[in-house]
Image (tube, rainbow, N blue to C red; front, side, top):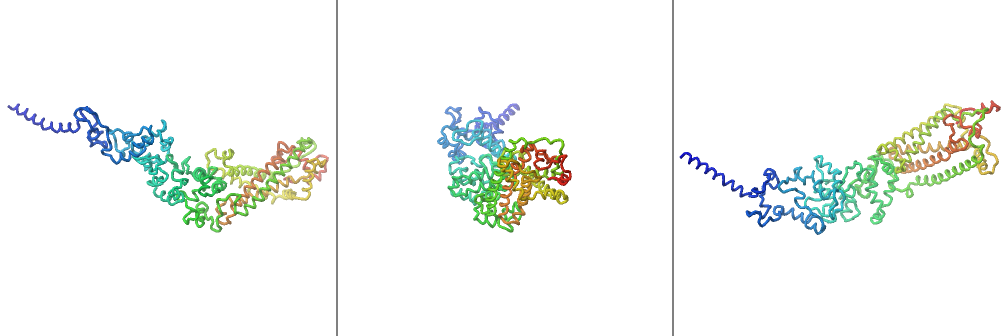
Length: 633
């Protein structure tokens, strides 16, 4: 009896729990055949969804009539509608008939193991969008039909946006710019990346910058439909957007004039179409700022430094950085006090169009002077070379045993000469490296990755060395009576002109004998006074340019341009004069070749000493010799 009651109680318990189990089995009958991890599925976005909600047609007859395709639009009608008109949707088939268009699961992953977009494991999480989109848009395979951008994912991976995403900061991912479910072609006016919408798209993160751009001259032109006006992507790029200071960034200090502003403002077609001034880019490139920028200097004014970055306004706008009332403040950001006493001179001016009358006359005088002087020196030395090569007696000879060569350059003169020569050569190299920064020899100053600071430092150190050599020379003259006596012989006299005429006549065969020997002739006098003149001019103009803040604050606006022109032209004249006149007489002249050693030993070769009456012979009048044996030059 007791055993019967126990069996009856057990039966009642089985009946009690069997009904819920049957209900559960009836609720999700697919689990009879299709095993799945309930924990993974229930944690997915579809965890509360029944199988038959998506897999329509799975009835008790074991799919005898088959399954209907899964239609995500049953729950996500709005998303499917957006997707349908995008390049990935059915309309995309009409655009790109051969394209294998992505489905929902192509981006979101398998329905049963799908994770929320906020989770980093989700294929559509901002950390993995590049990987997901790269399946079709990557560089590992040919781009799908209609996709013209090359390696966009690689470019994006190197961008500042991707770097921010990796750091866990807010950074733009693919869907932020192209939209999530409705990416449209760039040519579609409704596309988020269409030219007319780019700054709005970027403005979703960069609101303040977008507001500045909309008010700028570029933004207003772009909003009016001007296709030639730049938008965000024209300057920063599309996928490979780099930080301003990053290597290779198009908006870095050295690239702005060349890669950003230059292509439009030096384009003849755009200039003619939109009446853009044609002298803006060339005048900048020839200015000190432009030359330094071309040489790799980062800390130098570029277009954006003066005109602004996103808020570029016409010069007539009172808020423009380049409005006449604001120029002193704009230039004063780098040059304290600029324009405080005198108005700032025009900036974008080509040499041939300059309103600076002083700079104009410097060019008008110096350029012909350079041509006449250098051609005259060349002809003079060529005649001398031809004459001496035809007369062996005028070539370098060994001194006889019965003679002594007088000292021409004492130690103080040699020290001043050596310091000046070394400083001058460094000045020439570093100075022309600024003027011609793209030349191969100028690039030698940047082998260590220097940004132009080394060139400027060497130039200034050499300038100090040259000035110091001049002070040493004049101090020597001040304390040495013999030195003053020798330099007094450097003053021009009428006899110098007669010597010059006689020398030319002899070299062209009109006179049978060369001029009588003189200790200091016109050749040495031309060298000495030209050196003093060139040093004085380059020193004064160089100091004006070196201390540009004081110059811009205290001197009239025409001074910097005039000083720049005079400094450069005098440097050309001095360099050519040294190379053609001085180097000929101390190196290539047959009387001294391969070198006049007076700058090292104080005494010239015998042949040159004979020309200058600097040879003491044993049978000569010792009293006369002693009178002429003072310190040399």
